[in-house]
Amino acid sequence: MDLGFDKIAKRPTNQKIIMLVALLLAVGALSFFFLIKPKYAELKELKGKLETLQQQIQKDRQIADNLPVLLKEYDRLNRELNAALTELPNQKEIPALLTSVTDEGRKSGLDFLVFKPGTEVKLDFYAAVPVDITVAGSFQSVGDFFAAVGNLPRIVNISNVNFSDIKITGDRTNLKVTCLATTFRFLDKKEQDDAKNVKK
Image (cartoon, rainbow, N blue to C red; front, side):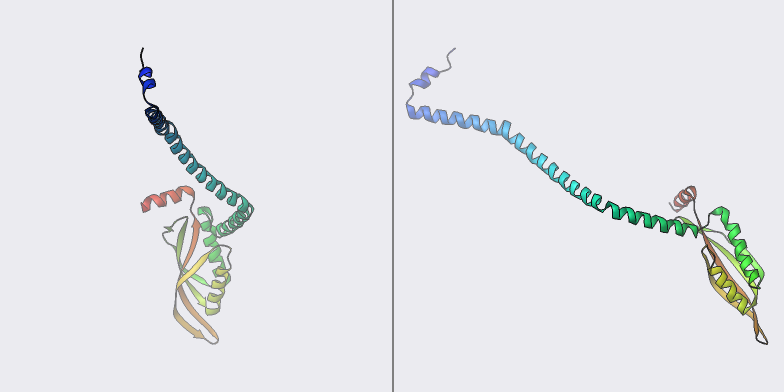
């Protein structure tokens, strides 16, 4: 099989050099496009991935360095949450809380004319439980009652306070007070989910 080497061998030297250079350039170009260029693109992609991983490692190191501080903060917030939740009774504790409100009123010397729990309003993780209250007694008794309610271990807000039937007898002022007492209770997980579904 004749590959034409004899013809090439008979050509002048400068043509042989040109042909050899052309052959080397063709082999170099083919090597670059089929071997080096794909590997270069792969290398560039791997460098990008390496840089991303190094950045992630740096972030993870910062988090790891701050872990003791973050754990202390988590514990502090958890304690605050638990303390706040003790101020929010659950469903079972509401009747006892309302009883303690009326007990405080009676201890203060007030007569309860109206004590009417309203419809509770469900919010994110808690529900507001309103109670319409009308009491009669001395101004001092009303003040003592409001102070006692404020000192209860559970949250009870008094709002919409209206005074009526004010009667002054000697140094004693008797009156009737209408107000809205609102307490709050913690919603369990099912109630929270139901409240979210209603909003949707």
